[in-house]
Image 1 (cartoon, rainbow, N blue to C red):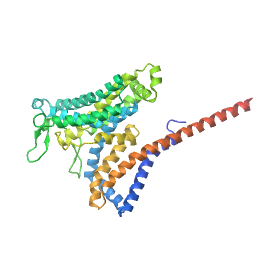
Image 2: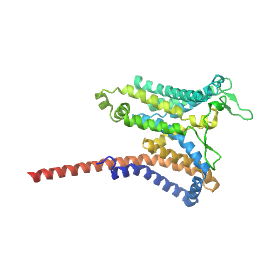
Image 3: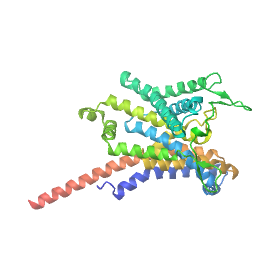
Image 4: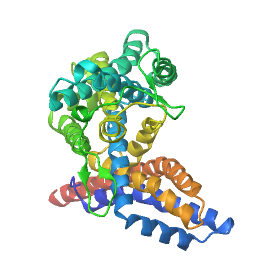
Length: 372
C-alpha cells in the first residue's frame, strides 16, 4: 500500500468529515423539533462568514485554540493526557502579565520586553506541567488525576495573586481587577484587515511557527521518533534503549511550555493585562481541537478555524432568531462523534490491510505453484 494512496487519504478524511456531517444532522433535527429552520441557521452562519470582522475574530480565536491543541497533542503522542493545559496557560498568562507590566520593564527595548514575557510564560507553563511529570515518573501518579488537581490549584492561586494587595490593581469605575497594564513598548501590534474594526493578532505568526516546530520535531528528529515510539509501545522503546521516564518528563515539559503560550496572543495583542474577564476554558477546547485534527499540525489548524468560526458566528444566530446554544450543541456532538468515527475508521483500516495481506499471500502462493 502506498503511503499516500487514495484509500488512505479517504480514510484520513472520513472520520472528521463524518463527525461534522453527523453533528450537522443532529443540530438540524434539534432545530426542527424546536420550531427553527435549519436553512435559516445555515444562511445566518454563511452571512456571518462573509463579514470581515467575523473572519478576523475567528482567526484570532483559532490562534489561541491552535496553540492549546498543539500543547495537548504533544502529550497525546506519548499517550499522556495533559488535562492541565487550562491551568498552565492561565497561571502563565497571569504571572507573565505581571512581569510585562512591571515598572522596571519599561526601560527595555520593545523586542526584548516581548521576548522576556513570552519566555516567562513558557517557563511557568513548563514548570507547572513539570509537577505532574515528576509525580508520574517518581510516584506513578496518573497525569490525568494530577493535572486536574493542578488545574484547581492554579485557579485558586491565580485568584489569590489577582488581588490589589499582591500582583493586581483595581479598575476604576468597575468591580474588575487586573495586573498593571502593559504599555505600548510591551505590546505586539496587530494586523489591519480591510473592512474590519478588529485587528488580527500579531502573534498569529508565533502559532504558525509553533505548528511548524511541532511537525519538524516529530517528523524529522530522533527525539520525535523516540517520543512516538514510546507512545506506541513502552516495552519496545525500552528494548531500543529509550528512557521512558525521561521521555515522559521532557514531553510534559514541552507540552507545558506550549501551553504557556496560549494566552500570549490575547494578552499582548488585545487585553494588555490579565484580569477577571480573561478568557477561560481554552485548554479544554484544545483537547477537542486536537482530537478533531488527529494531532496533525494541518488537521489541528483546520479544526481550530472551524471552532473559531462556530464561536464567533453565535452572535449572528441571535440576530436571526436562532438560539446561539445550537453552536455549543454542535461542538459537543462533534467531539463525541469524532471519537466514535475514528474508532470505526481504524477498525475498517485494520480489516482492509489484513485483506490486502491475505490477497498478496494468495497471489504469491499461486505464482509458486505455477512455477513448480
